[in-house]
Image 1: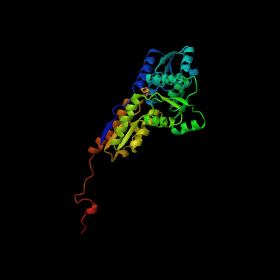
Image 2: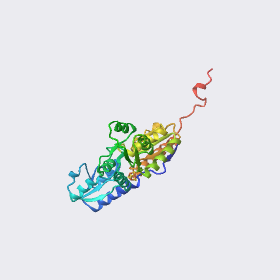
Image 3: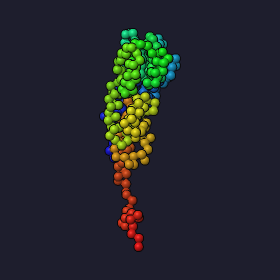
Image 4: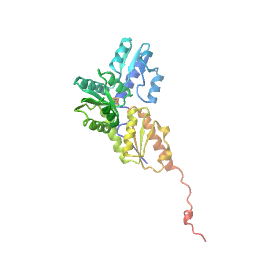
Length: 304
Ligand code: SF4
């Protein structure tokens, strides 16, 4: 069995940067907290919590000390509140997320209704929406866009940005509907380049292998997106969080396996998935074969 890894697996630079900044804050200060998870991955969050990181769900719960802003960012107003409460801020917002926030502000400045293609419950989108003066329209499907038009929530001059981890295919399908509805559509492509590269690599790999494995947390939006994308090109795509979740019976008749990962999946987790497959394959090829009947299979035995 051949096992292929996608060209890039493990953390993207934005996630690596946020983890390193959090580790550094923990090394330098005693009382470090974070609103939500630094990234959507349990292995990473458990490691940081073991070093002393306190996860809180509300700014009100932070009594003092240092607060890390995670890679997805926070609305400016929340950051200001944290400053006002006297907290030391470590801003680990990914620079690409900051660019998306700035793009939305720029579109609003140009007089557009800001339309965000993304998940309204995702922290990154809440951060973008929270930085605008006027309410933004957030849609995540062509159907949601049609509903907004029917409810007259869609204005005539719109400016569009995308959730950084969204797939290009989904975003372009919504934009092509939108240009038939609005009079003027301005688009700033805020899809993150590392995400796009990974999606293209994963698709290329999914097309050529017998089974495709996507490794990453079930709470990670980009991992789920990657799984759905791979499923389109290879119906034999499975999603696991770690090597323990592999069901080896699925690989009995498989010759080629592809592995891709979400952007918040630790490289060690991807490596352990690969290692488990390789070791399992070596063991089965060196395992003693059942003795053959010299007379051949029973079905062909000559009966006197
Ligand atoms: S996926 Fe892109 S935008 Fe998100 S943290 Fe990674 S590099 Fe930044």
